[in-house]
Image (cartoon, rainbow, N blue to C red; front, side, top):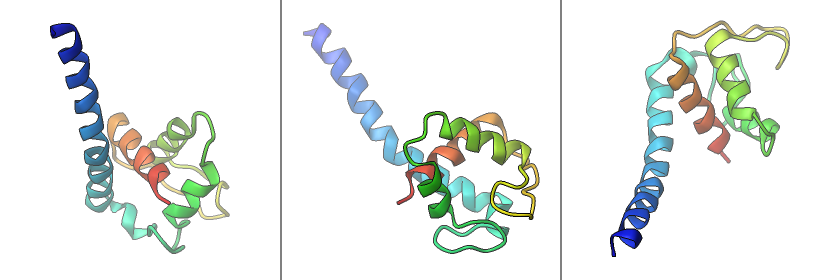
Amino acid sequence: MKKILIPLLAMGGALVLQPAMAQDGEALFKSKPCAACHNVDMKMVGPALKEVAAKYAGQEGAADLLATHIKNGSQGVWGPIPMPPNAVTEEEAKTLAEWVLSLK
């Protein structure tokens, strides 16, 4: 019985955490200065986050690449305006990147 119960609990916990992680990404986005240049649905100074998600959809390593861009900044990826580095931890950058990639 224990052999079945423990994996079932672990799987259930993983399923419960996925929507929570998406919510954490959105809350994190709203708590950081990201929204000064980005919007989910429309281009502002930077691209719409849904455009970013579409560009990197299905690409292996996309979350790591975006997390690096979020943390360290980037230049020339979406045009001439550079994205400055952001004061986020590695974990926050990864959460934001995964949230952006989840947008449809």
